Length: 266
Image (cartoon, rainbow, N blue to C red; front, side, top):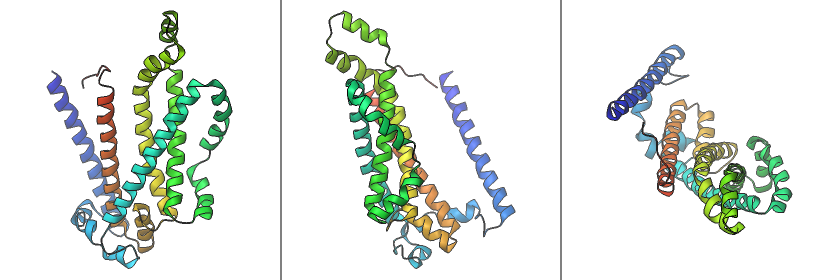
């Protein structure tokens, strides 16, 4: 029964993909190739654009296609994501451990979290210019803000009965935090990290679009000028592919770390 259920699950996913593909073909026929290239027209250039693109070269983006730009974005997201996640978890744990620290730092964090990335980007561009520094500050900052709140909420959601029981049995506050709170928040943190990684890709593309010497957002900016809609679609495809691969790696790593958590078979 489980195997038949999994087969049905994959069949439904395939149908969903075919519906999207059919809709794309229909809209391409309606709008015309200048406004929306068809899937077959995009597929013809899918591999070629990776290594060579006259359109990108003509706009000053180099003669090696979109590969250097995708690589630059991956490096930024990985470095900025790891630093932002690490800082967010560390500060979130401190906020959960030390009440005075939480009362002091939570108000400015809530204010900063409410500022949309597009609102803060112009200020950073004025300060640092269209450089990698702007991208890293945005990535690390917003990853930190997303993860620190997620960490604090995960700590608040730990069942109080478990904490009270451990204290009744003679455990110290440090032992409770280390042996009960930390393991309990890991599954919830995984969801926050996955959302944060997806957010990091969006922020990376936006900041590169506003101003960056290299990156997938830079490709979007150049192709808006050159009306290279096929290359924009191909770039979106590869960014999505890399983002899905990144998410999958997070899921696999989280599955290993939380292997003690019961799984529901689909």
